[in-house]
Structures are given as structure tokens and as C-alpha cells.
Image 1 (cartoon, rainbow, N blue to C red):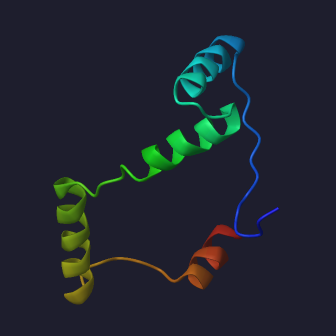
Image 2: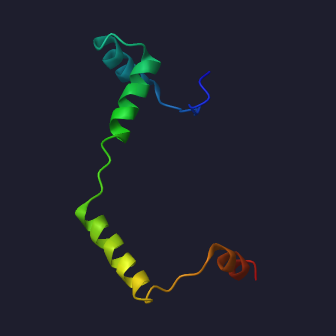
Amino acid sequence: MNPTKNRKEVSLDNQTMAILQIQADREGRKLKNYMEHILKEKANEFEITEEYKALMDAMLDKQQNGKLNSNSWDTFKVEISR
């Protein structure tokens, strides 16, 4: 097995599996290969929205201006363990 890949178990209902098998057959792929293919495609569709960019820019501005109220991970762990 390729050490750069992770194994995950997925449970799907019979109807979903049947639909995926039909689609895999149409593309001339094995079911497992087809599922990996469509999951990679879906993962690569990720886009950072303008709303998210604006939110991150605002957070960075607050941090640079000293207005961001945050704690270090160590401080947080101490606070929650009380």
C-alpha cells in the first residue's frame, strides 16, 4: 500500500452503491477507482469565497492593531482545565 494514502471506511446504502456502480461502468472504471476519482474532483472544487477573504482580512487587521482578543494554546488548556 502507498504510505502517502490514508484508508477510510465509508458506509453507503445499497441504492447509492448501485448508482455509483452504474456511473463507474459508464466511465469504464472499477467502483473503488471511480469513487476515488469523484472524491478527488470534489475536493479540488474548493474555493475561498470573497466573504471568507474579507473575514480573514478583518481578523488580520485586528491582530496587527492589537485589537484581537486571543490566547495561546497553552493558556487555553490551563483555562479549560480549571
